Length: 129
Image 1 (cartoon, rainbow, N blue to C red):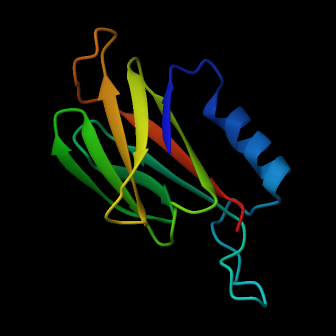
Image 2 (tube, rainbow, N blue to C red):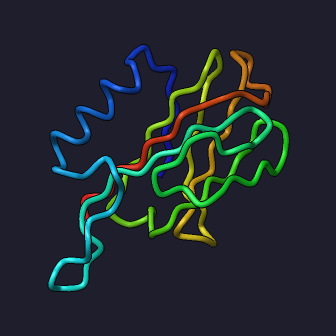
Image 3 (spheres, one colour):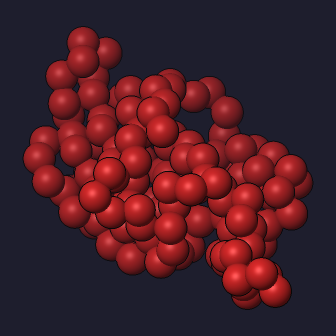
């Protein structure tokens, strides 16, 4: 998964759209379905530039591995059947899944010239099952 965005949509509007299309709960994951799939989930994290997890819905922590590079961990698999949307504050953001950890998403924040910069961001992950 790779996405790059500079969004003008308020994060609340994005969350409302994701909730309406997936039927997920803002509180996080639903119990597993009878076939043991995880069920729909809306997960999120509000992260400060220093790598501090400010608010969380299913996020377990943040590793601030280098300037502008963050690894956000979640309490479930976010690689399969999931999409991630990040909204940066005054920067550009790139999103990658962690190939060695299916419960994490890399977020890279850059300035308009492509230089890595530390920045606050909000991350939403929608999983359809």
